[in-house]
Image (cartoon, rainbow, N blue to C red; front, side, top):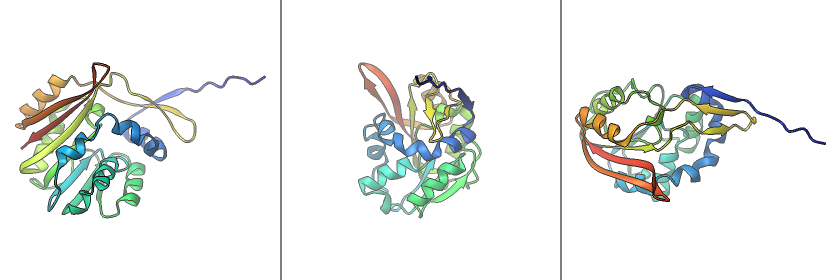
Length: 212
């Protein structure tokens, strides 16, 4: 008779959690993409001559989407920042042209007025406070630049299984959609688009395009 095996769930901060989960992350790509349904690629638009930054870039899922659409190759430069070195190692293998930074998205090492486009997909769910982050995004963006973010309707951090069969939860926070908009406007962004991806009449993801 087989004995049922139990697994203990470990709570981790973003850096440690995603370092552990990095090798399993790309297996969830289709699931994560279903929360956006092509909205990211559509809102980014033409990248010709543009400098783009992916914040909390992970293994490069956003770049994967833009490459599949055929627009990534038109960008002038592509940058990525993430708190997990292991995630960035995978990104670099897939997108060797990317200029990567291992660091905190709340305190980025970039000069003022650097980027035409900034994307933060599934990023703010890991932030307890949005104001400082949005101010930092505003600082590194060029005047007239666009900021695209997603805010999943996630009240609890999802349980993730690593390839080593460890069950973990990455520290996460819930952001009301109206609070996201208020915080963006408080950082002097002009919100141009706010849309919701819904499932069975319930919103599962808030997607926003704002301009500096």
